[in-house]
Image (cartoon, rainbow, N blue to C red; front, side):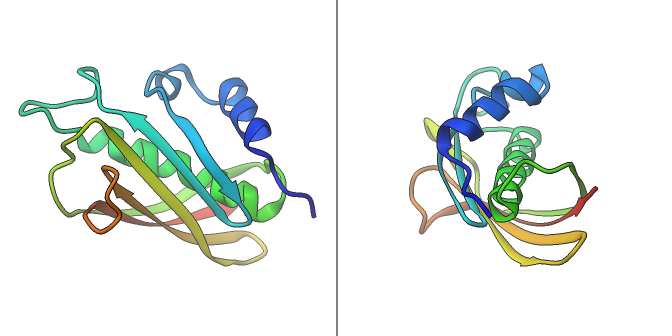
Length: 137
């Protein structure tokens, strides 16, 4: 099983994701076996009233981060679909950038379970916690 490089992951993102996801200006900051960290800048396009990042953008970032964690776990970009996503919002997402740290917890033949921790640069102050299941197709 090979490892996915950061460049391969970024190329996959640029060539495979829909335009509205790419408009979030996601940057992959790290990828390793079963793990991926992504970041987005806080912009007026995704901030809601009061200057905090909206929940829809938070969930889109978490879902995208899990795609990369699952691919890194599999060793390649395999066809997959989200099955379930449970999001708990813990505090307002205020700041200049948000990070999503995704990790695979359990991987079966067809179903992968993982979590994503989201924060604004301080891991000790999480903004949201997501648990998710992904089906390999």
